[in-house]
Amino acid sequence: MPGHLKDLIEKVNRSNDDEQITCVIADITLERNPLKDELICVSKGIPVLSCNGLPWKWPIDLKVQEWVFRIYLTSIQFMDSSKRLPCNCVYELDSSACDLIPNLLPIGPLPASSDPGHYAANFWPEDSTCIGWLDKQPAGSVIYVAFGSTGNLTQHQFNELALGIELVGRPFLWVVRSDFTDGSAAEYPDGFIERVADHGKIVSWAPQEEVLAHPSVACFFSHCGWNSTMDSKAWESLPVLALRCRSIP
Image (cartoon, rainbow, N blue to C red; front, side):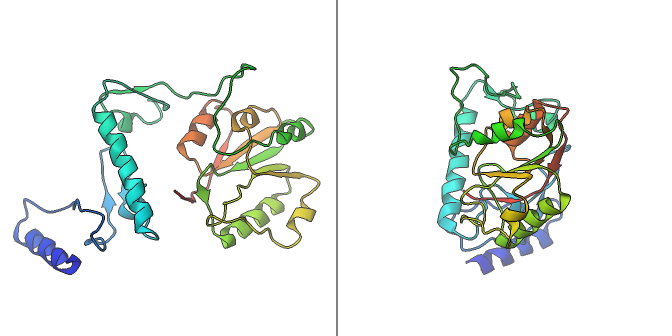
């Protein structure tokens, strides 16, 4: 089936210059993509997207891919039926995308309240000991390293990142989830923990907004997921260093 479909698309495109097939909408049971990975231009002013970079693309497990795709599809259906869509975004930061959704209401960034009785929802249990550690560091000295709730590295990438952080030689607070390396617990390079013990703090999860607002933090090393981007925008004077990484569903 995929081979015949590919031939049909190429035949149609060769025979008609005015009407080209540029997009195929198919059921998940289609065995593989009939077209090569190409760039998609959604709108002028928005960076082009790769087919393989679509958020529901998960070729490793097609069942997971279908599950993620259906979540996005359901979300779009709810969006279409809503009169207004309050969104944790900033119009000036992403005006081209905001203009594509007529009923969108940008209300971000939305930092969590600092009220004592306020409860901020988190994907992982917070390790608040990092705040006490930050209190002991000089102002503007700490590199905060965090790649969100789904950011994911290979073990090799993790080793390179760890060694890079060590070579910088600056105080650092690093959030390393239990599933950070391809869904499994990370293994640190030999002797790394001992070598950085006097200037590094590693936790499984941190109260990110409180960390970003701390005077000891000098910069934010991030995967720049949307939540982290909005968190960082609440403190615009804080430099952000971006490293793209995969996400796990």
